[in-house]
Image (tube, rainbow, N blue to C red; front, side, top):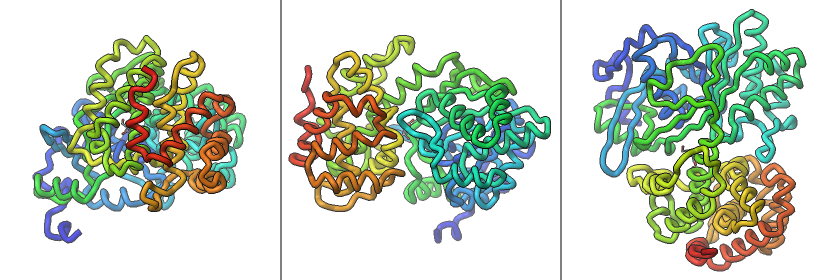
Length: 492
Ligand code: CS2
């Protein structure tokens, strides 16, 4: 931080930062909930391009959990640098589409006022899987979730995304302002439907008239988002400072690749997204399945097994030939067959993903991806497993990913060190591991009863149970790397 004092800070007043549009003329058209690194390297970049053509789509961001993003970005007028890197090249650009970042707790009234502003026509979301306060296995709202209970008791000062959306829609309805479109940009299958379901259920718990209004008037298009964006580090800040000569408190470092597929359902208007590289389609589902099962399913598998094998970063894990083969086989021999044909020829996709994972310029921690597994596994690996079991096909590799998660959330690594397991269910999962006293079959049995993750049907599958028990026994006995080595090639 001494650097901040000695180096001029990125700010709008600084001549070195030139945007290709007049930022003083930009007005807000989008409120975005969840201004993490991903949003700032993805939607905010597409919108930055839009602003060259149409200045009415600036973004007001909101952080639902932390105030650090606002604190870092406010002194630099919410400008920041996006650094796109791979082994060959590094490019940097300043992004000006974010006009403000509000802290949902300390600036709750301002946030609700922004969401009620008639200029806002879209509220988009990247609040991560757990932000939906839902049951990951079914996608239904969890009415006992602490944030939901809070918002039911305090409907005018909500803290959850469903609570904020419902309150703002209620105020807009009362004021005769047309509703905004809710655009989910999280890694969930049918993410628009999931959002509509949790928002609708929450509204119904509050007021059935309001729930009917939302069901009839508000659009919740689905979208598939893709860009690998690791958490920002001090090394990233240093790189930006050395390159542009300015201190940026919160740049984001990402890969060159970016994809956004959006269901075209925006009754209250939208930016010309197709002009800036997004794909507007009728049905996003095939794209979501492709991305969640191939990319995210591989990512989670690599994260758990890679962490256990001692790899800090994804690029290190994928450089290990056994891991690379496992992930390649997971995609080509297990996931691909489960994907709808309508998504087109995907033969290029696994190799392209392996190359993205190998990007040596990204310091993407296996620990970061390992977070919140209970919320991620259903759509990343369990869907593949369910579909394959229904066809009587082998699930060896996908089940190894799930067993890796079980081994990981037990909370102790292969060297006996504590793992910092970040997951809303962490305590409960750890208790199940402890009760199993090292017996894989007992541990698997306890885990399969976690219905928020496995639902009812998978818990009954003997094939899944046997696969998980065998893998887990091997993970404990031989370690992750040896287990991966033993598994690759199996079932050919
Ligand atoms: C990752 C994703 O952290 C994770 O769980 O799998 O954030 C992944 O990098 C993105 O979905 C890529 O689009």
